[in-house]
Image (cartoon, rainbow, N blue to C red):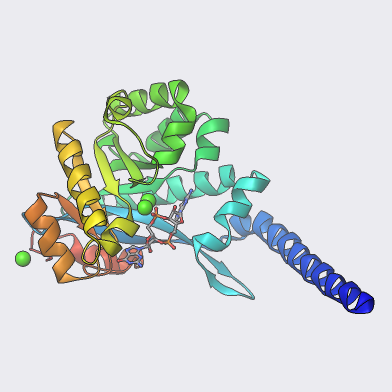
Amino acid sequence: AKGCGKNVFALFDKRMNEHASERVTLLADLRQAVELGQFVLHYQPKVDLLTGKVTSVESLVRWMHPRLGMLAPDKFIRLAEESGMIAELTAWVLRTACLQAKAWQDANLAPVRVAVNLSPFHFQRQDVKQSVCAVLEATGLDPTLLEIEITESALMQNDEYTCRVLRELREMGITISVDDFGTGYSSLSYLHRFPINTLKIDRTFILNMMKSSEDQAIVTAIIAMAKSLKMQIVAEGVESVDQLEALKDQGCHEIQGFLVSRPVNAERVARFFTDEDHL
Ligand code: C2E
Ligand code: CA
Ligand code: CA
Ligand code: CA
């Protein structure tokens, strides 16, 4: 039994080492990836439930890894945050998204905003306002065509400083959205202090709302709260017509999810930029 225990530990140790060395390799790759241009942005439309028109597209980063293929953000965002690489990655995402939005605008497509996810790490350590201003200036994009998504938990961590930065961005005409809403237990009075345009109801509530009356009740409460604060409401992760109908009945303003489109490349998402009804 003694020997057995030792083997278990040896195996555990080996796995840990493998895991650690995978991380080291991936981190080394990540350091080069921005320089080598291995990231791409995909875009997912948000559609107004009354008009069926696209209001905004969310940019979602993918890493075209030379050996591992296309990696989703859950495989590398955390690593980028922990290693400090997130600053460079975010700078790339912001610049690429704004350049793309400007190109769409120049092509005379119906105007849609482009939304960029900002990591809480980025918010704590970087001068967000300065980097956003620099990108808008360099790309010539109208600030009203840029949207920032910040998670509810990031909002709750930072408070005073975040509030000030968001207010400055908002004053420039940038749209501020709170992502993954409903998971962070924000109160009405708390939210009210922030200059927020939009609440995005977290995907897990939408996923369960048709089968759980509790989740349905949470969705109803979030919509009522957002309306009382004059905020726009987006439901994320909408996959079925049933969900769409229920959300419409509740007075939700916009939906985003596979029902309308998966995240797709810039060329493919542009087909949504028309005055047509996309529902
Ligand atoms: P998020 O901001 O909540 O983005 C929505 C995620 O839900 C995306 O996953 C999207 O593909 C997925 N999704 C959209 N509609 C549906 C649906 O109907 N059903 C299901 N099952 N999923 C749906 P993705 O692209 O893998 O991104 C995951 C997360 O990675 C994002 O969650 C965001 O937090 C983070 N992320 C993505 N791009 C960036 C970025 O450029 N910067 C930072 N800091 N984070 C990013
Ligand atoms: Ca988001
Ligand atoms: Ca989300
Ligand atoms: Ca329709």
